[in-house]
Image: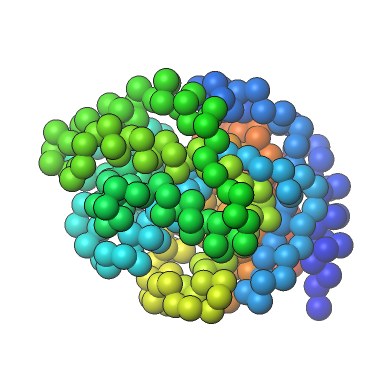
Length: 305
C-alpha cells in the first residue's frame, strides 16, 4: 500500500532543483508576474480521497487545461458530431500555429491546440445557447465542491487585449465556415474558460471523471466509458503541445497542460493528479510539473504502460 501523503511530501522536496526553472508566460501580461518559485501537487482518488502538498491550494489560471472540460461537455451534450470539424491527430507544431490550419482547409489537427479549442468552444456555445463559459465554470464548481471558482477578470482582460493570434485563428476558421457563432462570441467564451482560476486540489477533483469511466462526483453518468477512454487517448497524444511524445516517454500518462503552469494527469480506474509550477519550458509545459509527474509514476509504478 502506497502512502500517498508521504510520497507527495517527498516529491515536493525532491523536485526543488526544478522549481523556478523556465519562465512564466510573458505573452499574457496577466501571467507574466506570477512567482515561478511556487509548486503544488494534489491527487484525487476515484473514491474522492484527496492528498496534497506544497502550494496545492493556491489558485492559478488553468488556461489550456480548460480545453479538456470543454471537449467533455460537448461530447456529453452533443455526441460525436464534433469530430466532423476537428481532427484527433498530434500537431507537431506550436499550439497557436496558423500554418497547419491553412494547409488542412480550416480543420484543426486536434481539440487541444488553440484552433481546435476554438471550434469546440463554438460548438459548446451552440449546445448551451450561448452560456459556454458558465457551463464550464458550473461543472468545475460542482465536481470540486468549491462554489467560489470563477474566471479571473484581470487575466481575462489581459488575454483579450493581447490575443491577436487567437483572433486571427478564429477569423481564419470562420473564413472556412468552421464557426457557427460570431468570432467575438467564440473569443469571449474561450478567454473566459482559459482564465478560470483553480487550485491543484480543485482540478484533481474536477478531472476525476476521467479516472472513473465518465462518472461524476455524485456517481451519475456524465460520459460513456468509451468516450472517456477517447478523451484520455487524445490527451496522451495531443495534451502537452508539441512535446506530447516527450511527456508520454517521461510520465506515461494521459495529461493536459496549460501555460499557467498547471498539468492534469490521469491514471484510469485509479486517480487524477494535478501539479502546478509557473516556470515553463520551450513547449509551454511546467518544468517542475513534468519532473514531479515523472517522479510520481516512477516511484509508484502507476502508468498506462
